[in-house]
Amino acid sequence: MDVSSDDGNVRLPSLRGRLSPEDVNMDLTMCGLLVQRATELARLYEECGNWNDVEERWFRERLSNRSTRGSSRKIYRVLTSRFKNAPSELPNPTDLPAVLDACATTRDTAQVLYLYLAADDALVRYVVHEYARRIEADHSDAFDFSDETLASILDRLKYDDGTSFDYADSTTERWCEGFRSVMREIDALEDQQAVVGAPPSLGDVPLLVSMGYSYEAGGEEWFDSPTGLLYLFQPTGRWDELYDRVAGTDAWEFVELHGELQLRPTDETYSWVDRKGGE
Image (tube, rainbow, N blue to C red; front, side, top):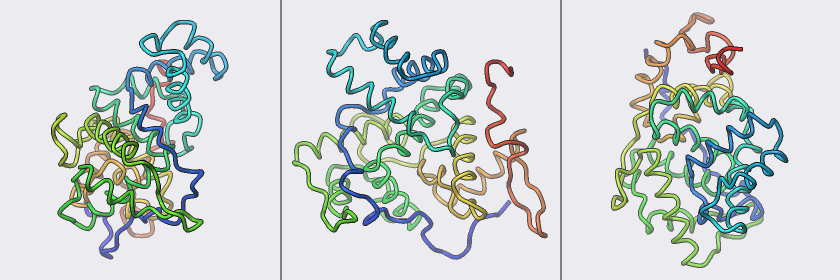
């Protein structure tokens, strides 16, 4: 079913000039997706219901026992920030363990957690926007995640006060490696040596989450700018296939509104999540 826009415009805007220097940090240099630890934190939050108890148990049970306590606290801060600041358009962190339990592969889990990273980390989000724009415009370097290409994108970052991105080269290089590590985990890069990748395949759960994110974040014309699909680097040529695929689940359907077929959740956007076995 063809529901894509035919206006030819790039749909995801650049964030240049929209971020303040205070929005940007280099947390990715010390903490990537860390899928296992992030999953453990999500489960603790579901059990405890508040972050104070989560923090106490996190350190008491030595879930971070391979790090020094100082390093462990930094990692805890970064990972919990992604859940504490999760936008309402993504599944509530309380429901996240059920979402992750439904994932078929580690890649699927990483793709879900990646959406929380991109929503929380302004610098990651800026770079993701720039790559999504290149993918939509069919640029030849659309999946080039080399230091050179990443650095060129970072160098063009201008803040809302007119200043520019300014970090030491060594810090920037570590950040670029951190970004590539995330790209490997979501399957946009094939292996440790690769710096040029391709659009990742989406499992059923990342597809449902990315579609829900797109629907909740995008307003009436969300399918012309599906945020979740763009963040997961899905080119426009795949959108119709993904829309048809999600419509084949019980969670989504095509409905006729005002004489046009539109894609909508069959119930609440994330009602498909099996919360505590359906309780």
